Image (cartoon, rainbow, N blue to C red; front, side, top):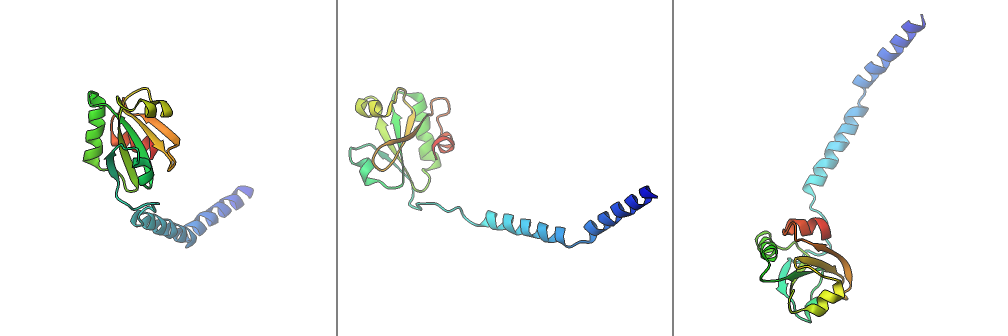
Length: 149
C-alpha cells in the first residue's frame, strides 16, 4: 500500500513538472538573457582607438587610457614578431602601446625591473608600474591581451 502511494506521488510530480509553465518561463528568461548578452556590446572605459607609438619623455603624460611600455630591441627576433603582431592585429581601443628601445633606455629598464627584451609593462597615468609580462615565449598581441588587458 505504501509503495502504491509513493508511486502515485512520484507520477503526479512528474506530470506536474511536464505540464507546468514555470520551466518554460525560466527557459524563456535564460534565452532572453543570452540573446541580450550576445547583442549588447561590452562597455569600455575608453572608446578612443588604440595606438602604437615610439617612446618619448612626454609619451606617458600625453596619452590617456591604458598604457603599455613594450621594451623592444631591433636585433631581437621575438621583438620583431611581437611588433608584427601588434601592427597586424591592431591595438585595442583605449590602449596605447609605447615602443621603448631596450638598448638605449637603461633608466626605464631599471625603474621597471626589465631584464629581458619583449617585456611589456602596464603603467598608470603617473608612470607607476601596475603589472608586467615577458612575451618572449609567446610574442603575440593575443598573449599581451590575456596577461595585461
